[in-house]
Image (cartoon, rainbow over all chains, first blue to last red; front, side):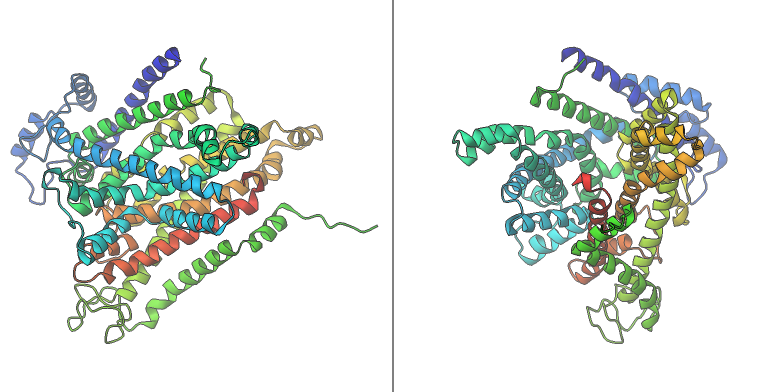
Length: 307
Length: 287
């Protein structure tokens, strides 16, 4: 197990290196640069700016310099947010994005798992069909529709919660963003749990547990739940990617100062270093999440063997 | 002796699909909405980009034949939504076809050749897979002229082939060493013939299912990108850009969000239902 974990952790490095390299060269090869503005700058000033940011050097030199900076935890200066380094920008926004994203995943699990278990226990009844219809809807309704709908209902119609804003992270302002983000997760987790729970409930050891007279809740809680959670655990990696994508939307709709918006703004402004920084940080987080999911899987399922 | 008529794969699948009422309903809805999206705008006296200064921000069933109301600039929402459905469907179809062609070719080569080439090709897919799709799309959108939306979505389709390639490779790999392929080889059938007659029909089922499920994904990506301001540009309208405009007006004009939102969600639900139905029909082992 330990050897497996170490080899997987080392395996992250080449994956990240490929991602960084691909992103770096694709972005640099794109036509247009960060200093091409509507009103063209005088060529001398543009040349000076490019020299200041090292953009006048050959691309392989820029690449090596970027890698060298990364190794020291330096993402370089932002081209558009003057006076800010990319590290500062991401360090401001990332905790906000992460706390919203992780809360959404947690909420999704807390609701989705019981929902799926419930549907599986009531298989082929009206309760099952209703739950699954709602779940199907949850998978199809994108969060850029859910988020404004929540704003209309809870913010404008019933006036229960603030429509948008941040206010230093007051809980009231976080309820709707987290709910909007967790909507899709609840649906996915519910569907996954139902499927695997149905399979587990048909297995021999569950039949044994029932035969020896255990009450149904104990059969589910003690015997069925853990193996039924395996597909949910292995979905954690993709769930994180889902939350990253969703945070772009949710932060826009609710006006939150998270880091998701930098990805879009950076792409529109051709702020190379900002986009690269976001890709490196989010990419590493996703790769790490996938790793954690795999290790958790092995811990939950003793049948998995590592060689 | 009674003769039993042999039922082919497709006849069998069609029989199973016909019994799935949700999938049939979804298919009918998609066909009807598609037809209506192309016919509907001609029934209305308005064009998608004309401004009606007399009727700005009117609600559902508004005056002057504004059946679904108008937006902030007095543009007819019915016509805009229908042209939005047109655009979203066209883009999704284009992207799906691109991902289809690349995915099948890539997957079939990796699966059929096997060995080191297969390892390398699949390792590359794994790396791309570990990134959220949206990253790749955002990087690509810096590359491509935003005015030409079709070029952008051909490019998105070009990244969307990853799952398709995996499915086709897996199928090809598992079929390659099966007895019936060996039998075909033994009686002297040539390799292209084997691929065409024996491998392709078996690969086609999952591929059709996945293609049906790719269309709603592409609709969703187009809408997401338009929502983020990276997709369709004014005055053209897609479902995503209409939802963006609507989301800004929820205080005064909720219908501007609800109308395109309704069509987007019902399209997505129907494509997903149809895809699930096709999966059950074409691949009963998956159930």
